[in-house]
Length: 114
Length: 122
Image (cartoon, rainbow over all chains, first blue to last red; front, side):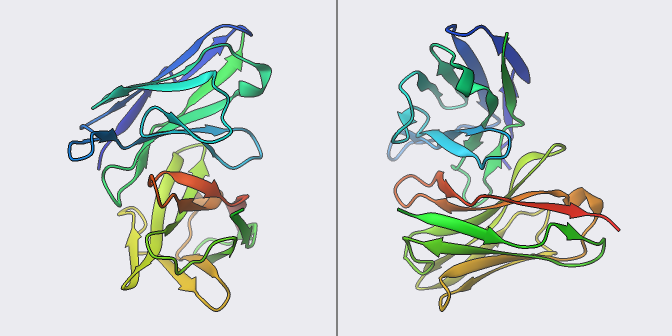
């Protein structure tokens, strides 16, 4: 299985400041035939199901605020929240869907307000 | 608008079988190219993909290695739903269980059920 490793495990950021979460895969999730990275980001708030934020490593899901952005390729990826809002407090997970059907998630990064 | 609605028990005894159902509205369990998944979340393991079912010429299922010997995922076309059955439960199976659709365009999990909190305890 592809192992997904996130860093940091938790972070605290001031309102209005930038938050950055990293994700590394144990092997490339870039599919050469279509040049797409099979990497998604999810937001999980207490009492709610996970919400898809980003797919193809950098494409925002419909309705997701543009302060959320994804970047990276191959094995190294980043989720950035450009200006942290109170409602962004959550746990964030990366997930690879390259190795079908053995989908794997990172261990999660808890984001709080400083 | 696609929605997934789950039903199932909250408390199950060790060694027993967990059954959770996911009702689909706004889409079809039989639609070719759509995979219907079960995923669980626990403090110990985070998010863990368990398995999926999908129709492509015939019904197919795939299971995570960690639960393969204990898990059955079944579609029910008459009710437009799919279900999870996990047997030989232990306290380590305590988790929130989610059903989720894999997007036909991207493969990411774009629609999720509300979740079923399952506690395995005597």
